[in-house]
Image 1 (cartoon, rainbow, N blue to C red):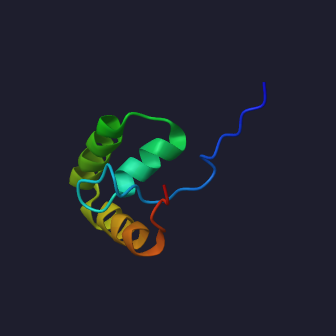
Image 2: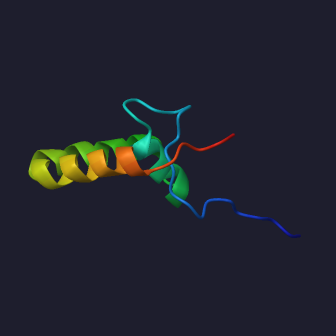
Length: 68
């Protein structure tokens, strides 16, 4: 059976977003639960606010929206 996995690119997911869709896009890309990705982002943001905040902002500005 031939199946094509289209999860090769990281893009923002506008349908499942809370802020900008970066975490939901990352969770979709790696086939990981969205809540766990958001929780990990919050925990890492508490530990490293400058790096995670800058990375999230860069991802928000640079990633394309997923087209459905």
